[in-house]
Image (cartoon, rainbow over all chains, first blue to last red; front, side, top):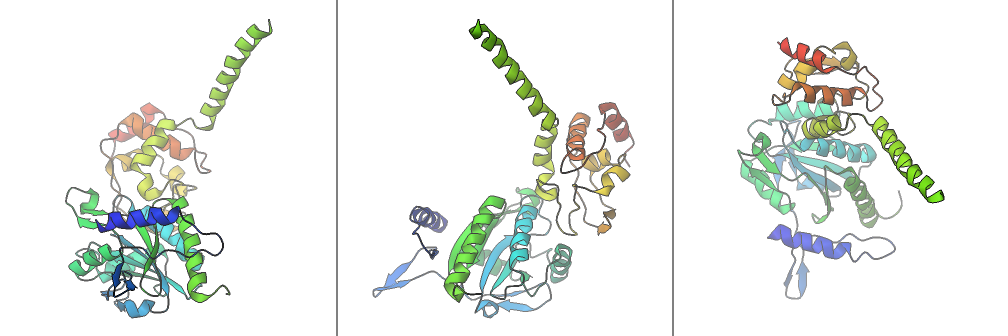
Length: 206
Length: 134
């Protein structure tokens, strides 16, 4: 239901692009309390990354970041999403204002050591791209906050259903854009959104 | 007079175009099967992924292990291999439902795309190689 509303908003805003500097919408269902609009925000989290380091919201306090959900032994869409994630990583790897955060939904098999091996073989630096594991319910719950699908399903290839979505979060914990991580053209569009958000939150210079 | 000339000319041009089209991609069935069975991991452009999934585009392994490839497609791969100097240790699942002709089509698509220019497999060759899988 929440996702439907979110998609509706996304379509609404897609039809209503102002000219000039683009401001990305804040996605999700908003509340109005005493005349103030409350936007949905990513809740507090605490996971463990490929180096065994604890990763919390504090790491992203002054950064924008790109989120996805995956599992290492994924026989379907994950390699395509990772390949597109790598394009984003390569483009911004010298930019301190942005990071990537991948959540494994296979908490049983994707241990810290397995994530480390995976990250090394992708050739990524943990300074820029964290791959995290953690409490099963915490991972599955936060997928919902990022408007992503993560479901255990023995009938799905590899045992999990998940969307190959890449999600863009601003430094105030608001989700601002997303794309289909298996679709290179949609990822091109997404990277323009990343540039627009960098401009919005850090100023046009740099 | 002119009309009848055109009547012949147009189909002729259409046939020529169709021929050119065929020439540019002779392994349509192989391409379809590749996208269905292989592209999730090796990607549409055969680029592979880091040191996790080996490339097929420009891979020295294709020519060096020509006899082994049909078995790898059908039964998968568990041992460590080296492709263009990089070690790959992840297991690859095979697709046991593939027939010899489907395997020949996929391999010929791989062997002639993304800059690859290797001789095609014949069907009887693939059949014989599949007899001797480990």
